[in-house]
Length: 195
Image (tube, rainbow, N blue to C red; front, side, top):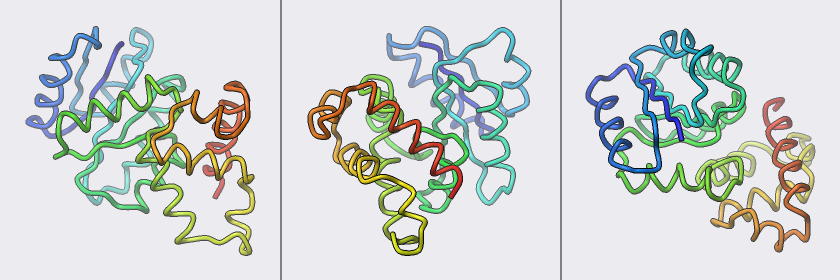
């Protein structure tokens, strides 16, 4: 598995690189201090996962995230945040992120987040699903029309995923095939990006 890290803070970037190199799961780990450096590599690099460091209070974070997703549409993008902010997490999801990690989180949390997305093949991390559900419940209600464009199956998928269920469990819980569930997650992404 190829992982690329984009992080302006040298200590955090080198720490993540060292941590990920300690795992045998990752073949290649590339690091960049600026997003533009990663984008220049698009013809020679096809990362499976991109960890994109967000700069606190920068208005360019979401623009960079959308650029990364445009250049690497098949890559899973995790954003790296200084602190949990529901609005930033939701907007990151709308812009193409599949999950997030905190810059000061434990090694176990980083590996768990990567495992959630790659092994469970749920297309988004458990914590991202939790934040989406919380955001939708807090900011929108079904009567105002923001929540109603998600089907009850899609809402249930998010709730079940936020409880830690993997793809086979989601299939059992919803009585849908894994292909139907994958289709539902693509639909969720598409709808959330238009909210």
